[in-house]
Length: 244
Image (cartoon, rainbow, N blue to C red; front, side, top):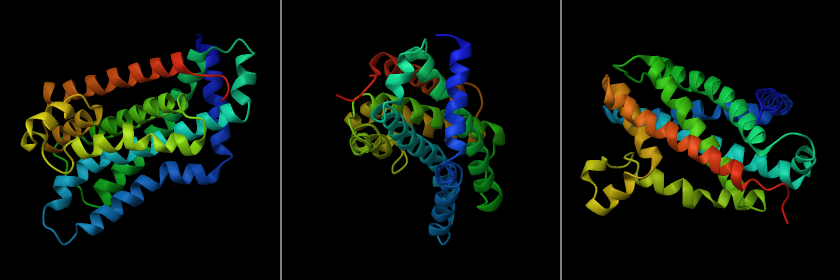
């Protein structure tokens, strides 16, 4: 794995993305539109958006990046592009790191737009620094990228990649603390939620919106980063050149 090959892969992915306006619109604008729809839906309920708006910022980047990266990587393998790339000195680690870097840059832009829209347009109140909210959103998107790349290794079609959502995404939405505070869950479900990375993402967002500092914010961010690195490492180990 070399920096030059990783950057070359990231550049290729960004150029491909630049030639696909629909994917750019989906990647950059759809989270803001969903946050706006959510704020409008809760407009008549006083305090509801202040309570749920933060966790929603952790949710949408995660889901969208999971879908986009899993489907895009699988398309590369099914089209034979990945097999041709693997005949060059490019390694699996270069490929995965390049993808993570490219979509990480896209996620950073996406986070700036989404957080700005939530705060400026939708009126989300944040007691902590706004940049910390953006940092959490970027890490959530990278988490979705890592799990999406990992899921693509076990799928044969784009449809199968999306089918991994009920396994890897939906349980995290249900048990992450969005629908119910985690400390009010039955003990077995609370124990399961402690093992789900999206739970820590929602904890981090809540810490920023409350203005917490120190371990209340740093602890969840470390967990999210560690899980993301593990997912990217496993994705590199399980990456297949082509679909049988």
